[in-house]
Amino acid sequence: MQLLHAGDSGPAVAEVRSVLREFGLLPPLASGAPDDRYDASVEQAVQAFQQGRGLITDGIVGPATYRALREARWALGDRMLGLMISAPMAGDDVLALQERLLELGYDTGRPGGVFDAQTERALRSFQRDYGLIQDGICGPATLRALRQLGRKVTGGRPGLLREQERLRRAGPRLRGKRIVIDPGHGGPERGVTVAGVAEADLMWDLARRLEGRMAATGMDALLSRGEHTCPAEPDRAAFANDAGADLLLSLHTDANRSMHAQGLATFHFGTGHGVTSTVGEALAGLIHRELIARTRMMDCGIQPRTWEMLRLTRMPAVRIEVGYLTNMGDRRKLLDPVFRDVVAEGILVAVKRLYLLGQDDQPTGTFTFSDVLARELARAE
Image (cartoon, rainbow, N blue to C red):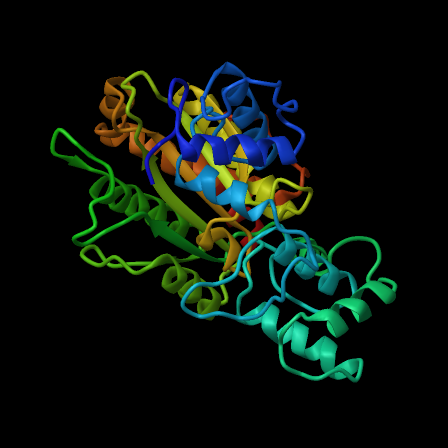
């Protein structure tokens, strides 16, 4: 679809305005006023919607924002829900179904608002336990049963509680921890490419530097791809799940039409509606603060997303966007091997701090690779 922004007009803008009014983000249309113009009020309403959904708040309706606008219109009960392989059903109604099943003790995985195979299995289990037809479809009878029952699980969502308990039991040592490092893109898929510099190559180099440091501490560091391959995101997530990884770290750079856009951002699983991976969010925060302190890059924040890599993994996962290749200053930093060493050290230190759980820790930006090695050796003796 074409991007919609301030100054545009036409049927697509009229549709956006209609949806925004449904959400109470635009006032009712005044008599005689045009309903197909993308004016300042629409731009502000789009920004408010984007902020509430965990999207980039640029006031532009692109594919992600348009999809979110459409998905937000669905409420549980508006339509029958089921597994569709070719075009998976997605929307706020699917998210509500997943959260309801989780409350009742059925594991849908991370509730990302997409009706996937795990959601179908959880729904079939619910239907079996409550004497319903086990068709994996949320129709009127299933919906009625879901609404009549009280919640079984209290004190938090079970999947997120399991994450926290695994972290607590893991202990502070890094030795034996299995980490999947995911360098973005690869092979023929070069990612962001500017002035002959490709995201795939830079992130491969950064991943190898991080892998070496992790191996030195006794961690089991695995790469999600080879130097000349580019698995799809679901395949990378499946690799991490099959490996029984404790954490996944996905490495990327960003791009923007404006050469002034710059800085570092980290992402963790979260819907923007209170559902989040608490351990993933904690790790994203630790990595973000370490890298901002060490690199002095512009702070673009810590943000929740339901991207496949974050949603399909069963372990805490973080995506790190290390600067904008389209920005000359960020690109100059990323081309410096010393800078990539600093980033690798910062990520390693953040992982160590995650497992310390606040005990015997040091201020952000002061912990070094040598400190981590010394502590690991001391604990081994």
